[in-house]
Image (cartoon, rainbow, N blue to C red; front, side, top):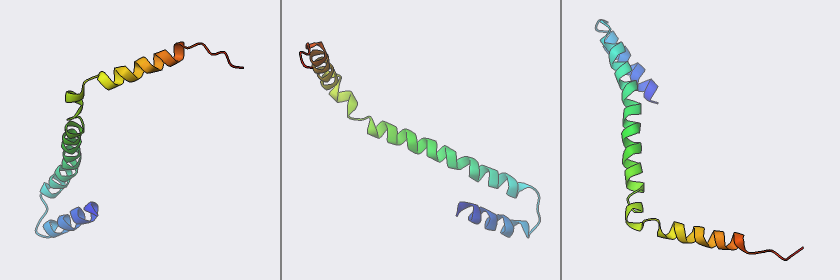
Length: 78
């Protein structure tokens, strides 16, 4: 979809005379896509991590202690 739009814009501008700016603008548009994706990923990552700071390591350490206690029990079965 984006490729189609860029090619149509390129055709509209190239009819008036081509001086290489269309190619540069097309490259700029394609470079802006990963930039916006990286910014969006950074914003999402900071938003998703917002509750971890206040919670701390308490629940994880409690779960690990229960796991260790269960592994240290001797098994007298089969």
